[in-house]
Image 1 (cartoon, rainbow, N blue to C red):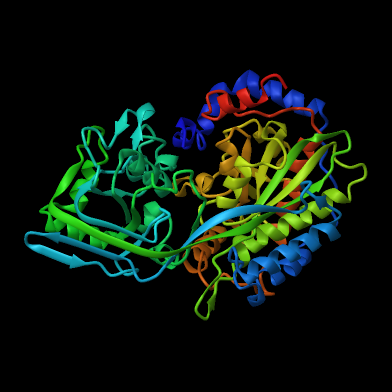
Image 2 (cartoon, rainbow, N blue to C red):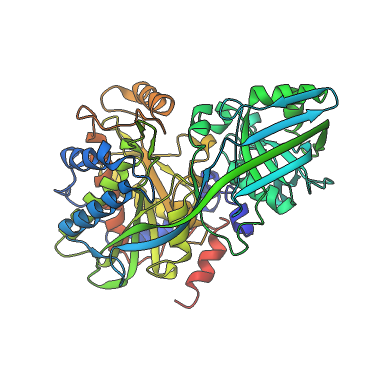
Length: 561
């Protein structure tokens, strides 16, 4: 991961940065966009709540078994999507057809992983799923870490632009590093510390694993706490079975031997055994200059035995060709996969993300029916293995079927509005790029109020597929459902969103029901359609705002074009 990747959180939530550069930039871009002729399209006929019900009821059915990559459910999903895109009037998105092969590596635990901690006067064997989860991403079927000193490294962050280094003066080679989830700004709420409550990429557990590997740690363990993680322990424990990844050139040997989580209660017990107070050290870690430290004489012993297999999953790529500039592309993404099944339980993923996948099908049909067609081509990429770490989109971004320098923008559809129509629309990443101008104009035409990310503390910008395009320079945004319900107001919207997050997100209860209200999802799709159409019929090449960490990448990408 290069410096742009590691600085992913620096501006995604900074609408203030856009305001600083606003003025002439916003005025100039608005004039340019208006000259290109923004016109709100009539509501597209194919997009309706009934059509969403039709597709979601199939994709989230028990027959599809939770759409696990490489399963029989994947084959059913791929067949369904290819037929549906064809029926919608779209064509195959590449010369090879609708399917882009994505080579995956999977690790299936042969036995429960072992994680014990020993000290002179202490011994604990941690219980899998109850107190810890553990895995490896190395292509080795038996990985162990023996007699490894345990060290607390605060938030596990090295961020030069924030003058922050939790590894300063610490050699972690051979050691097991324990770190906190999220970043110091979240814990303090201080907008001058990182980005306050809005999570940066430094707060994501994926970053912490990457940084620990760069530092040479033997193992990396994140302490789970529900509020800063934005999900409960059940989500962590549920995802502890088969894991997928992409093969690195070194066989993934540059990764830490073991990666995982422990509960906060377990952390408190271990810290106490070392003569330390977990909460006191957590508070100390909020201050610049925090000194990481060994946890007394504690030594960790970890072992992960896995069955490793390699397989090929697939992205599905469909195209509505542009009439005037077919070699310029507006891309819509959504992930088709979910969590499969566990014993008799099926994780159907109706909202996450059969809804977004159904949305791609309806958008494709709406664009295909346009007369005249859009000026630029519109590409639809239904990606695999998002739930395994955005793997399908990462593979696509590294092996795009259309050039990234000719990709104008990416709009991600990950979870449609299941609550009913709203007066507002939220945009994850709002304030980061000139795509905001298209969003603002389309929302105004629909009588909708645009709001920034409603949960910036959850780091959502780094948790969905658009991020892999952003990391490579392509302006990308993630529209998300509003909270101000037409029927019930904001209070009811927040209640329903909270209920889903606590009771259905990544649970077997996220299943289809004919009683679900998809009117809001249909309304949002019509808005997304108009955003995409305005970009497709524009000659503008919207960029990241001046000062954004991805701006230089895009400038270099577009140089000479």
